[in-house]
Length: 219
Image 1 (tube, rainbow, N blue to C red):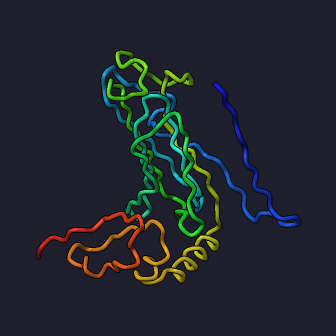
Image 2 (cartoon, rainbow, N blue to C red):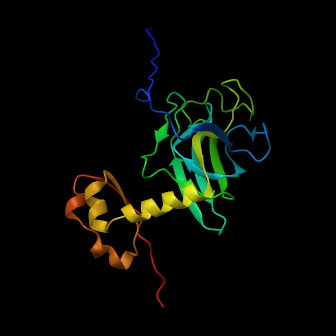
Image 3 (cartoon, rainbow, N blue to C red):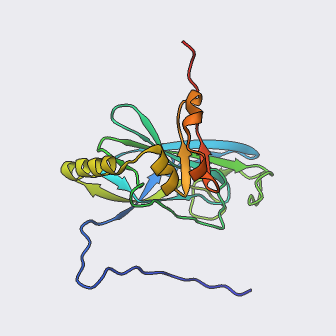
């Protein structure tokens, strides 16, 4: 069996220095540090919460489990109580530690005081093809046969003035629904169900479209 590894390095142009530093942070999916209890032949769930102490932009997302990991969702709970899903992986594969990188104009940015919630699901049943032994109780640990749950995410911190400037710039760049449909490769459609005829069809042809139509209660 032949194997190998590759590494890629992106260098700044000569004389150019980055204005900001990116930090790799492991956002936990556990309420209690290094404690995990997955009974035999079961589906399990854990969640963890981390408060952002600074205005924070998240530039990428990589779920991290071992062999029983099934799915992970990262959600932001903003200071005003509203929620925003940051990312979700529903079919985790231990053999592929995929890193999902946000486009510069789409990287989520949140004010300080936001809570990052990491929700994690585990499959310790025979249905999980990666499971070496569904009859085995599984706890937290570094071994592959143990389990863990955290979301590796690179973050960049901003001052209040920088945060407001980024929001204003993004608002200014936001175009019409037609412009978004033309520009996007993957398009999320979120409108009241009764307004579905307003969705521009022609520019969406051949693209990946996530249908998230919202139903409205009749008054």
